[in-house]
Image (cartoon, rainbow, N blue to C red; front, side):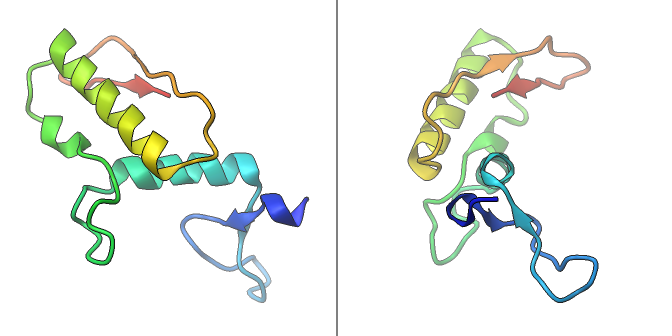
Length: 105
């Protein structure tokens, strides 16, 4: 594994032997960063209040094309700002079932 393409695994923890910190390769690290960005509400981090995404604001909005477009825009805005290793972002949505909208990035 190339050391320049390695980062801490999320959540941070120790390897089985307990002597080293778990690491992620570049692909895993980007995937974990996306999860962190999208699951962190803006304002949640005191020292970096602009970090994160406003997805929770759409939780009780109607499931329609306007809401989908607002969510798509928010995901792209957040990932473009906070994860520079992503070169191209495409967001699509699965069929909403039982009030759940699934986004695929």
